[in-house]
Length: 180
Image (cartoon, rainbow, N blue to C red; front, top):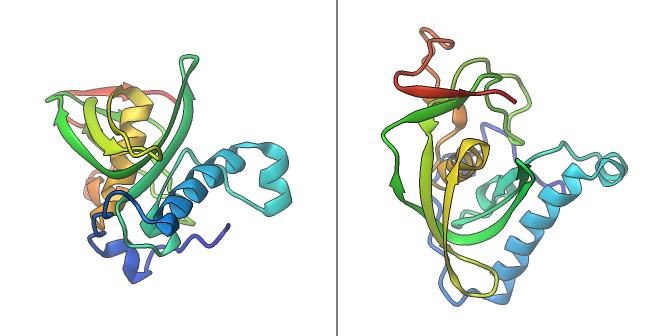
Protein backbone atom coordinates (compact mmCIF):
# COMPACT_ATOMS: atom_id res chain seq x y z
CA UNK A 1 0.00 0.00 0.00
CA UNK A 2 2.04 3.00 -1.11
CA UNK A 3 -0.85 5.09 -2.24
CA UNK A 4 0.17 7.97 0.03
CA UNK A 5 -0.93 11.28 -1.42
CA UNK A 6 1.44 14.24 -1.40
CA UNK A 7 1.12 17.85 -0.26
CA UNK A 8 -0.99 19.90 -2.64
CA UNK A 9 -3.64 17.15 -2.83
CA UNK A 10 -6.99 18.68 -1.73
CA UNK A 11 -7.86 15.78 0.65
CA UNK A 12 -4.96 16.79 2.91
CA UNK A 13 -6.64 20.14 3.59
CA UNK A 14 -10.15 18.79 4.29
CA UNK A 15 -11.76 18.25 7.67
CA UNK A 16 -12.08 14.44 7.83
CA UNK A 17 -15.48 12.92 8.68
CA UNK A 18 -16.22 11.00 11.86
CA UNK A 19 -16.27 7.23 11.42
CA UNK A 20 -19.68 5.74 12.19
CA UNK A 21 -19.37 3.22 15.01
CA UNK A 22 -19.34 0.31 15.07
CA UNK A 23 -17.07 0.67 12.04
CA UNK A 24 -17.93 -0.92 8.71
CA UNK A 25 -15.76 -3.81 7.49
CA UNK A 26 -14.25 -1.40 4.95
CA UNK A 27 -13.30 1.16 7.64
CA UNK A 28 -11.80 -1.59 9.83
CA UNK A 29 -9.75 -2.85 6.89
CA UNK A 30 -8.52 0.70 6.11
CA UNK A 31 -7.42 1.23 9.72
CA UNK A 32 -5.71 -2.19 9.86
CA UNK A 33 -3.86 -1.31 6.63
CA UNK A 34 -2.72 2.04 8.05
CA UNK A 35 -1.16 0.29 11.05
CA UNK A 36 0.36 -2.44 8.89
CA UNK A 37 1.89 0.17 6.58
CA UNK A 38 3.60 1.96 9.47
CA UNK A 39 4.91 -1.36 10.85
CA UNK A 40 6.15 -2.46 7.41
CA UNK A 41 7.81 0.90 6.78
CA UNK A 42 9.96 0.33 9.90
CA UNK A 43 11.05 -3.15 8.81
CA UNK A 44 14.21 -2.62 6.70
CA UNK A 45 13.52 -5.67 4.46
CA UNK A 46 9.87 -4.77 3.81
CA UNK A 47 10.73 -1.08 3.33
CA UNK A 48 13.37 -1.93 0.72
CA UNK A 49 11.23 -4.54 -1.03
CA UNK A 50 8.24 -2.20 -1.38
CA UNK A 51 10.08 1.12 -1.51
CA UNK A 52 8.50 2.46 1.68
CA UNK A 53 9.71 5.54 3.54
CA UNK A 54 9.95 4.80 7.24
CA UNK A 55 7.23 6.45 9.29
CA UNK A 56 5.89 6.29 12.85
CA UNK A 57 2.34 7.38 12.11
CA UNK A 58 -0.20 7.63 9.32
CA UNK A 59 -3.66 9.16 9.04
CA UNK A 60 -6.44 8.04 6.68
CA UNK A 61 -6.48 11.36 4.75
CA UNK A 62 -2.89 10.59 3.70
CA UNK A 63 -4.21 7.65 1.67
CA UNK A 64 -7.02 9.82 0.28
CA UNK A 65 -9.66 8.54 2.72
CA UNK A 66 -11.17 11.60 4.41
CA UNK A 67 -12.19 9.83 7.63
CA UNK A 68 -11.01 10.21 11.23
CA UNK A 69 -8.60 7.27 11.58
CA UNK A 70 -4.94 7.20 12.62
CA UNK A 71 -2.26 4.59 13.22
CA UNK A 72 0.85 5.12 15.35
CA UNK A 73 3.64 2.60 15.87
CA UNK A 74 6.80 3.63 17.67
CA UNK A 75 9.10 2.59 20.49
CA UNK A 76 10.19 5.12 23.12
CA UNK A 77 12.17 4.22 26.27
CA UNK A 78 11.54 0.49 25.68
CA UNK A 79 7.77 1.02 25.55
CA UNK A 80 5.92 0.13 22.36
CA UNK A 81 3.23 2.61 21.40
CA UNK A 82 1.15 0.82 18.80
CA UNK A 83 -2.33 2.23 18.25
CA UNK A 84 -4.96 2.20 15.54
CA UNK A 85 -7.82 4.51 16.47
CA UNK A 86 -11.15 5.60 15.05
CA UNK A 87 -12.23 9.18 15.85
CA UNK A 88 -9.23 10.09 18.04
CA UNK A 89 -9.67 13.33 20.02
CA UNK A 90 -7.34 15.22 22.33
CA UNK A 91 -9.41 15.50 25.51
CA UNK A 92 -6.81 17.32 27.63
CA UNK A 93 -3.32 18.75 27.24
CA UNK A 94 -0.58 20.45 29.19
CA UNK A 95 0.14 24.17 29.08
CA UNK A 96 3.81 23.29 28.61
CA UNK A 97 4.92 22.65 25.03
CA UNK A 98 7.57 20.46 23.45
CA UNK A 99 9.20 20.24 20.04
CA UNK A 100 11.57 18.00 18.13
CA UNK A 101 14.98 19.67 17.80
CA UNK A 102 15.40 17.96 14.41
CA UNK A 103 12.01 19.23 13.23
CA UNK A 104 9.18 17.03 11.93
CA UNK A 105 8.76 15.16 8.69
CA UNK A 106 5.72 13.68 6.99
CA UNK A 107 5.12 10.82 4.55
CA UNK A 108 2.99 13.22 2.48
CA UNK A 109 5.78 15.81 2.25
CA UNK A 110 8.73 14.97 -0.01
CA UNK A 111 10.88 17.89 1.08
CA UNK A 112 12.60 18.93 4.26
CA UNK A 113 10.81 21.81 5.99
CA UNK A 114 13.23 23.23 8.55
CA UNK A 115 11.90 24.70 11.77
CA UNK A 116 10.50 23.91 15.18
CA UNK A 117 6.92 22.66 15.45
CA UNK A 118 5.47 23.55 18.86
CA UNK A 119 3.24 20.82 20.30
CA UNK A 120 1.69 20.13 23.71
CA UNK A 121 4.21 18.34 25.97
CA UNK A 122 1.52 16.01 27.39
CA UNK A 123 -1.83 15.01 25.97
CA UNK A 124 -4.67 12.65 26.73
CA UNK A 125 -6.32 11.11 23.66
CA UNK A 126 -9.63 9.29 23.49
CA UNK A 127 -10.57 7.06 20.56
CA UNK A 128 -12.02 3.69 19.62
CA UNK A 129 -9.67 0.81 18.87
CA UNK A 130 -10.04 -1.97 16.29
CA UNK A 131 -11.90 -4.12 18.86
CA UNK A 132 -14.53 -1.40 19.21
CA UNK A 133 -13.37 -0.46 22.70
CA UNK A 134 -13.10 3.14 23.84
CA UNK A 135 -9.45 3.79 24.67
CA UNK A 136 -7.85 6.65 26.57
CA UNK A 137 -4.10 7.10 26.20
CA UNK A 138 -1.86 9.47 28.15
CA UNK A 139 1.21 10.52 26.19
CA UNK A 140 4.29 12.68 26.47
CA UNK A 141 7.48 13.11 24.47
CA UNK A 142 7.71 11.72 20.94
CA UNK A 143 4.47 9.66 21.18
CA UNK A 144 2.53 12.83 22.13
CA UNK A 145 4.09 14.73 19.21
CA UNK A 146 3.30 11.89 16.79
CA UNK A 147 -0.36 11.70 17.90
CA UNK A 148 -0.77 15.48 17.52
CA UNK A 149 0.80 15.35 14.03
CA UNK A 150 -1.61 12.59 12.92
CA UNK A 151 -4.68 14.20 14.52
CA UNK A 152 -3.75 17.45 12.71
CA UNK A 153 -4.11 15.53 9.43
CA UNK A 154 -7.74 14.81 10.36
CA UNK A 155 -8.30 18.55 10.60
CA UNK A 156 -6.59 19.48 7.33
CA UNK A 157 -3.50 20.82 9.12
CA UNK A 158 0.06 20.13 7.98
CA UNK A 159 2.98 20.14 10.44
CA UNK A 160 4.63 23.13 8.78
CA UNK A 161 1.51 25.25 9.41
CA UNK A 162 2.81 25.45 13.02
CA UNK A 163 6.31 26.68 12.10
CA UNK A 164 7.03 30.38 12.56
CA UNK A 165 8.15 31.11 9.00
CA UNK A 166 9.64 34.48 10.03
CA UNK A 167 11.92 32.74 12.53
CA UNK A 168 11.65 28.92 12.07
CA UNK A 169 14.25 28.11 14.75
CA UNK A 170 12.93 30.44 17.44
CA UNK A 171 12.56 28.22 20.50
CA UNK A 172 8.86 27.96 21.33
CA UNK A 173 8.05 29.61 24.65
CA UNK A 174 7.64 27.37 27.70
CA UNK A 175 8.75 24.32 25.65
CA UNK A 176 10.84 21.21 26.25
CA UNK A 177 13.27 20.35 23.43
CA UNK A 178 13.18 16.66 22.45
CA UNK A 179 16.30 15.23 20.81
CA UNK A 180 15.81 12.52 18.21
